[in-house]
Length: 122
Image: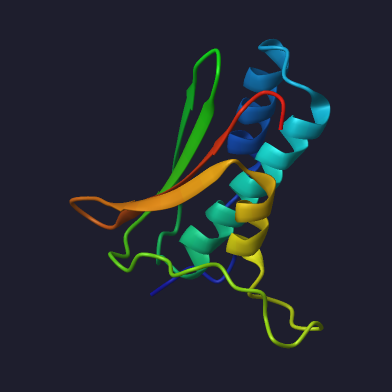
């Protein structure tokens, strides 16, 4: 049975924000990274069946990579914009694609990792 309430992602967001700020990344790019993380985190909970998705952050001098892991082996399809512009859902991966330089999904032994990459001057 899945939890009724979404897990708290504030720790992952704060750690990501602090890491990028300490590395001198622009505030607008940090905001993009936070929103992309939020979308992947909620998708992992809502569609991936993970009560507490695992977040992995890797930062080099030229690139940020954030992966969110869940328990579902189903890889996401091509991002879409909902046909109904008033729809309350269906824009998450479209936002991630728009806000980041690259994104994708990799199968894991159990489930998958959906990731995005950003460069400092997004």
